Image (cartoon, rainbow, N blue to C red; front, side):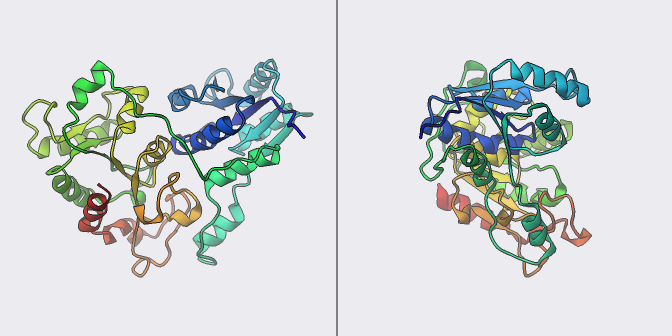
Amino acid sequence: MQNQIKHILVIRLSAMGDVAMVVPVLRAFSEQNPNTKITFLTKGFFKPFFRDLPNVTIFNVEVKGKHKGVFGLFKLSKELKKLNIDAVADLHNVLRSNILKAFFLGKQFIQIDKGRAEKKNLISGNTFKQLKTTHQRYADVFEQLGFKIDLSNPSFSKKATLNNNTASIIGLPSKKQIGIAPFAAHESKMYPLDLMEQVIKSLSKDYKIILFGGGKKEIEILNEFENSFGNTSTSLSADVINVAGKLSLDEELDVISNLDVMLSMDSGNAHIAAMLGVKVVTIWGVTHPYAGFSPFNQPKDFALLSDRNQFPKIPTSVYGNKYPENYKEASRSISAETVIDKINSIL
């Protein structure tokens, strides 16, 4: 029987990594259901993530502006109802989306099962096994709406052509290019910066290194990395380039799409690179891939894990925000040589 749903409202408001994880799922959905329209409710900042998905339209939610609070969400629901939506796929399942659910009575409104009980068992040490991936949890929501999504044979957008501004910053692609994003929301998810400096120093001898980050403090640290490795010539021949704070999100996506590999923490940049079909090596501190947040379509051995013999309570939390004090630098148990060898083996 043909599915009667022709227009789905998809909800995922934040955070950056979680929104990026939706992209390969919506790409598969769009390819397998080309006649079904998607309106994606999220922050307008994330619009570039979906720039090459023709049947996906972004609806900008202003949670700190006109859509703030219950009355703002009521106003939002009235705006959305004008779009003639047939069903709602809530990939967030938080207070805001639950309030919206109350305003969409009569519409099929399927919410993600985040597997909270399973994740609680994982971080409490009661179990230690691979849980369902977040990508599959997203796909399950669509399946409940009657759309089976096959994620096993993904396609990705083509490498982007850099505009003049970006090309002037990145320079000539004379070597293979490695992106490095050394930061995460919590220190416990970050690789110690002294070890990361060793990694950058070694890899920059053979490859072009492009550094990613955001925020004043991060940009200062990345500038120090850029200046530490003899980049005295123009950026056209520099081996280490910091792009943080210099590019728009659209331009950053263009650069990432051209990388040969991305080295990232368990953070948003890993998911952005993965959604673009780039190979991603991840470093894991107090979190663990078993919680389901591995970047999309990456081999298991691309995830470099802290030593659980030394730190048996890993994962200490799903998001890295809770951990024993002596676990703060758990990822120091991953040697710089291990990281360098993994990237060299891929390239």
